[in-house]
Image 1 (tube, rainbow, N blue to C red):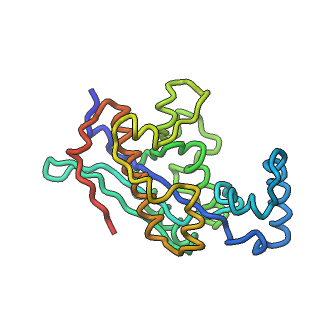
Image 2 (image 1 turned 180 degrees about the vertical axis):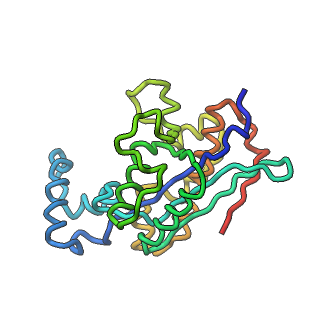
Length: 237
């Protein structure tokens, strides 16, 4: 039977990303050419310019985007009560941000858990760390390893139960398991606008930490644990 102590060393994680620069025109001529080639495949069925596609899609590609927030959380027992302690690493200096995250990942034999993490969060972090000249922590050093040697948990993969036909959003799982979520304020498609046009990094941080909390609760629900109200949420500066 699953118990909260079974979550020892699980680090729940979510990242928020934006385009590397505000506008396509700010890219170097070489990177503009690379984006035009890449976006040509996406634009084949829609009449959109490379500039428009850059604003809409660049953030999801590690080669053309950057990380502005990494939210993490872990469960711990304090005086026989359980807490989910969450923290955000954020800022405009991506290298410093990722160095801090890498430092955290080296502190313990973590297992990383994210929603769609195997397709997005984990590889994105790996690529951006390497681009910034940061040695990958062992938990992210997965190239050449066998699947059973990789300590990554993906809640979307858990929900599939071997079915690979459908993508299931974190929001939908939260609804199914009756987990409160404050997604009305912002969604993933608005992160770039919120950062570049509104300059509201705190709003992105709140959004990211909400995803961390929901991911943790979804993971617990997938293990059959539903007493989420008994877990105190602690935000760590």
